[in-house]
Image 1 (tube, rainbow, N blue to C red):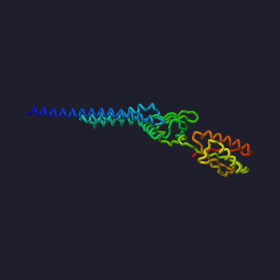
Image 2 (image 1 turned 180 degrees about the vertical axis):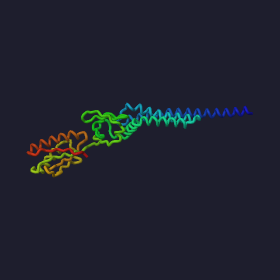
Image 3 (image 1 turned 90 degrees about the vertical axis):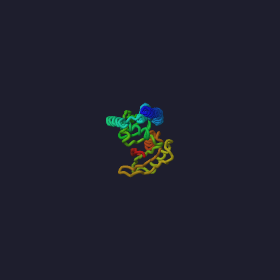
Length: 269
């Protein structure tokens, strides 16, 4: 009788162990497939993110794959009766220690991921971040590289980029420029406005919608300031601005305006 009881108990125990074992194996297999799926999803997402350096794609994909498989492994051990609370606590403590040791680095990684997701700029954009202004040439997991207008390469930590106001000069389709010309009180202001209007509107790069605005801007102690407010595409902004300054100077000189012109760039809106 005792032997029968033992046999029944052993059979039931082996059955439960076999069921738990196959369940744990199924969890591991499912976790392996899910980890591969997570790797492919992360890789595809990063590669589709415009302006992201693809050198970091494998690293991000492997991190996602490892995280998913680790969760599956802990679940499988729990199915086999292993106390996973201590394992979870150990992994959490290790993660906390690593996080504290690499606090600055991890903040750069987190900021880099946010830059990849929200994309406030992409490769080739002209941007201004704090006191740095130039063209974006690389967006990495840890740093963003900007080549300034005078050719200096600046590497900005992503945490600094993310925590600073970002001005993107390339994101807008069109930009506005205010061209201010100063003429003497003795000059014919109406004629000056006509000349300014003719020079600006004759340039094909100046958009007709919105229409340019020509008006008297201010009366100073030394001069009358007249304003040409016009829009161009972002690609034509700098070239048009430079060309119009030269054309206005030449046209006003040819028309006999004796007071030197003062051309002032006002921050575009």
